[in-house]
Length: 158
Image (cartoon, rainbow, N blue to C red; front, side):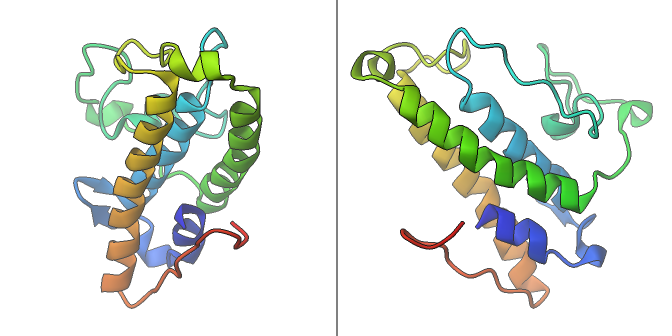
């Protein structure tokens, strides 16, 4: 549903404010954190894609502690809609690989993120709730401008 929301977003809505940040920044934030939270403990965390500016996923804040707000000169250009959609699509493969590599022991172990003091299994649910939160915001913003996003349920192509 997230990918569909990004793909269906009209060009004139891509920069519309959803919550506190533009639609595109929310969409990229979700994609980046899906990528991050699917990274297994001990693996290097993903870099910001080369087509995105540093801190683009931070929703207006630096992505390193103390998470200070970005200054106007640090805020980069609007990210391309097609690149954000492709990034989201690529996360399906990472999810399959990540889940396939888990064991009962790894799922019961640490999340791998110091700010998520929970098991790896709980971190998957945390990731899902994070996606649902922001994807719901994006879909609701599209509905307000007359663009519907169909429900994607089990067994349907992503």
